[in-house]
Image (cartoon, rainbow, N blue to C red; front, side, top):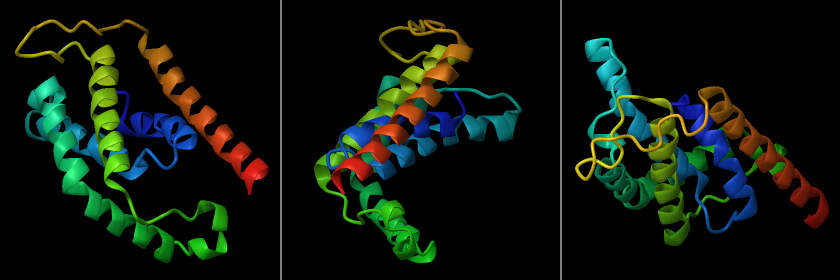
Length: 170
């Protein structure tokens, strides 16, 4: 993968541009759940493998679960985020707790597809279009180093846009 946090921080650029239409928490949950498969294989076999949940069908299932069942879980997590971390003292870091259905679906679908593509670029064992194809058409379309730079760059752009919006519009 690019390590799961790389996937997640890349999503900040989408959240900063479309804050009401993109659930960052369902995006993150989707990424983490998909990578649990690779961690499972790593801890049980010692080999980092990407199997069913790293295919178009697998990520689709995870996206559906995260968009529907994950929505209340994410809302609960956001309540804890705001209360436990004393976000009332840091107003700009406080987040809206309610996630609408549209943003939940967009977050989950974006998380699933970005996870599939980013991992496919990096890992030789991926077959993202299985059962339609056993080839990895995304493998090394950019170098692994550049992939990490792209993810970090998206994070920096997302933070910049977020801060710019806060300064200009609030």
